Structures are given as C-alpha cells and as structure tokens.
Length: 605
Image (cartoon, rainbow, N blue to C red; front, side, top):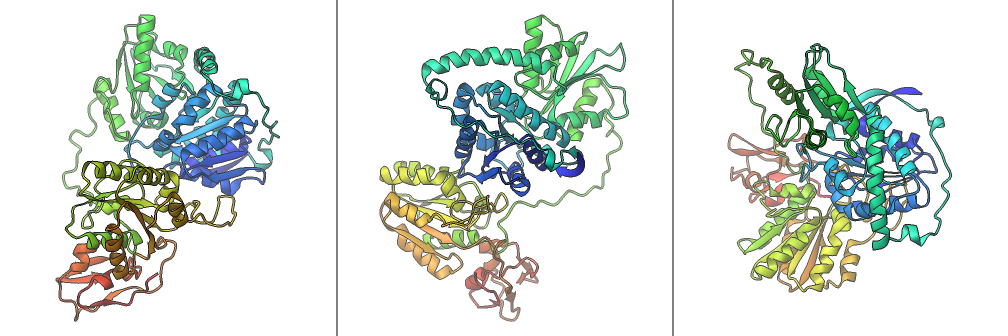
C-alpha cells in the first residue's frame, strides 16, 4: 500500500484496477470522464478499454465481458444512463457471471447536464443495488466491494458518485500495482436457459430478484457503509439522516458541537431497514439531508409506517430541505440550524459591502469553428422562415447572442429528429439540424436514417471539429484513433451519409466564409434530406500561430465584428474594435466580416 493524492474519479479507476477489472467501456460525459481515462493511463496489458460510440453500446460490451466471466465496468453520467437503460433493465433479470460495476456520475445543480436526475431512484426502478460514496477514499473502497458483491450475487451493481466526489481530491491509501487482483476469466459457457431472455425466464428471475434484494437489505444493514453515530446526550431525541457528499457537509456543519444521532446511508438500495430501525429508536424527529430525490426520506417514512413508529420525518417533502439543486455546506448548515432551533450564525454578521460576482455565461471559444458555421448559416438564410434545431455539445453554446442559432435542444441526437417533427407540421419552414461529429456517431445516424426513410425535408449540418471537445477531446470513430492507442482508418461521415441514401452531401471549411455561405444557400434549396459537413479542427487542438490585429486608422467604428460574431477576443475601446491578443487565435473570421478591411494578420486553419 502507498498514499496518493487523487481526484475521486482517479480513485474509482484505481480501485477498479485493484479489483481486477478486465474490460472498461464508456462514453465521455462530465463529471464521469476521468474514470475511464485514468484506467487507460494506468492499466496493465491484459486490460481492455474503449470509448464506445454511446452508453448503450458500452453497457452491452461490458455485459458480454461479464457473461464470459471477466470483471467489467461501464462509465457514464446520469443522462448517459438513460441511453443505456434498455440493456441495464434486462441485465437486472439476466444477471452476469463476472462482476460488473456501472459507474454513473450524478450532477446535482446541474453543473454541466440537461437534468439533475437521481440514480438512486433509477436503481430502485431497475432493482439493482447501488453504492453512494461520500468521499474520495470511500469511492475507492466501494468500487472494490461493488465488484465483490456483483460477482457473488450475479448482478450488475451501480456506483453513484456525484460531482463533488468525482472532482474532489483526497490523500488516500491505495494498493501497489503488483498487488492488483488478476484472474483468468472462465469464458462464455453456452446456456440458452440462462443467457437468452424470454418472458418465462423473466418471470422466474423477477421473483428471485425480489427475494435477493430483501436479503441484501439485511446484509447492507450490517455494512460499514451504513453507520449510526450514537447521540451525544441521552436527552437528545432528534436525529439527522444523510448520505454521499451531504454527509461531509453535515459533519462540517456540526464540527466542534454536540450533535444529535446520525444515520449515514452508503447503500440506499436495497435500503438498510434494520440499521434504520436502530437509528430511529427513541427519536421524535429526523431531518433527512440529501441531494436531489428524497430517497432516504421516503424510505424512513415507509419504515416508520411498517413498524408503527411515531417519528416525524422531515426533509424535502416537508420543505425543510430544498427540493432541487446542489447542496452546499452553507445550505446544509442553515437547514440543520433551523431543525435544531439554533440561531442563524449569519444574523448580525452579514457584510454589506461585498460586491456581486461577475456574470460569466458560457461562450464558444475564441476561434471556435462552430461560430463560423453558425454565422455562415445565419448569413445564408437571412430572413427566410427557418428553424435551427441544436444538440448536446460545444455547439449548444450557439444559442447565445449575438448568434442566436439554437432554437431547440433536447438530448443527444434529438436535433435531427426534432427538425423532422417540425417539418411535418410546418412544411414551409426551412429546417436545419446541427450535430457534432461525436454526437453524429453516438446517436445522430438513426435520426438521419429516419428522415431519409420518412421523406422529410431538412438540412443536416455536421459540425466536425475532429474530436469530442466538450468533455475533454476524447477520440471517436471519425478520428482514426482508439482509447487503446490504435491508429486505424477513420469512419467517414460523408460515406455514412451517402450510404444511407443522401444524394447531396457537401464538405466545407466554415472559416472560408464566402464559400460556406454559398454552399448553405445552394444546399438548403435542394429537396429532401441533405447534409453539409462543416469541417475544421477544434481550435484547442490546432491553434494557429498568427493573431489578427485591428488597424485603428482604418476602423470606422461600425462594430459589425463585435455585434455579429460575439467572439470573446473582440471588445470595444473608444468606439472602435479591439482584439485581445491573448485570446485571439487568428481564425480570420472577423477579418472576413469587417467591411473596411481594418482587421488583418490572422492565419486560417
């Protein structure tokens, strides 16, 4: 054993490697991405790792490995679990042979997601056990215990860290590499009565799952992850139940003070009922401090009802804890002070001269080729009746002013199919769907097939920057690289579109503004489904050396570059445009927009 200062995601990865994981598959999504990347950096030669094209594919790859007796792991974020829910729901019935852990990083807030759904609730729905770590060290230990439990019970197990655990840091003891567990998988053993899902098998296995989970609830009641901290005074008749990172906040808020009895729930499903009963004995009131869904609160209410306990359970359902959003030390401390009847420590101590933090909305990077793509389409379509359907990725930021080029954004791949629905209702509307190269492979292809098959009329704009930029520049099928370091022929987006049946597929560099605008005008007027691939590398990966500069004597102060592009490198001083050389990438888009030629010096990629 040795000590390392690790991010939570790194700890999960090293814990999985120490547990003998052999196959790891996932799809990048903040806050989960670093788990798979850390496995790839630290793995031994007998470990296989891949960025799958989406979470469903990752779940099924890991399931196949577990069928063959290997320990496997899936990594995704909470919305990624939606994509993988079909195989996971069936896996809960079929089961696995090798241990299989599904790491689902929840994003309370949400900080970088469409939703702030709670995977604890999802685990109840799919009847799969879930571990809920409260710290980096606990995440490291839990992933190893999750593998053991999964293999012993023959079921997938979910590990549910949240953003503050994923991206928090802690110095923890970890296994030396030569002590990592290594096993030779038995291999897949044919048995259609086990591995082929049929209604009769599902009915029988459902009953087994219910019995297993009831027994597992008792086992979890003895687990070190579900703890009751004794009350400090015999006269104390109130308690606090909590979990995950909220447990850390509770302990911070109670630091140095006498505190009521505490229940820490580390395995929220199956719920540790016997441990909860031990906690509830002799109490009059309990405050449940949890993030997102009132999972513990509802479980304690059920336990009280089942066992006839007259304990008042308070939390989100009673308005004592905020029903949504991310918890903080401050919000948890305030809820506890109110619950315990303590004075608000902020009373009379609030400074009156604290300035407000500046508002910094997210924005496309200076030089981002997506800005040029959006601008070219906007220029080409002018005042025509047009709908712009967006998608998930950097290009979602095209909704910001002054571009204002994202009218809808639902979930990955949905822009293409949303546009179809609008077309069928408003056939006089020019429908555009924007999708990134990684998202195209993840979930965009099916939408194009659907559009072609059902004879929609829309323009698919693939914003191809040769990477998965939003989550940290991971490879995908179009990059010609795999996570195992292999270099291979890239999957051609143009070839895929033409194979579907599209007759008009054009590729253009968005940073060549005149050509891009002409291409959009020509293609948009073609009937049926057509596509434009705006191909230019992410500026983070291919930053040119030269930067653009403004000739103040030639600038007439029209500020067209500032008003129409919204580039963070452009600003106004003394009524004229100025370029911040520290941010400018020399993409030349502003040079092409300037009507007087006052901007020059850039170097187009």
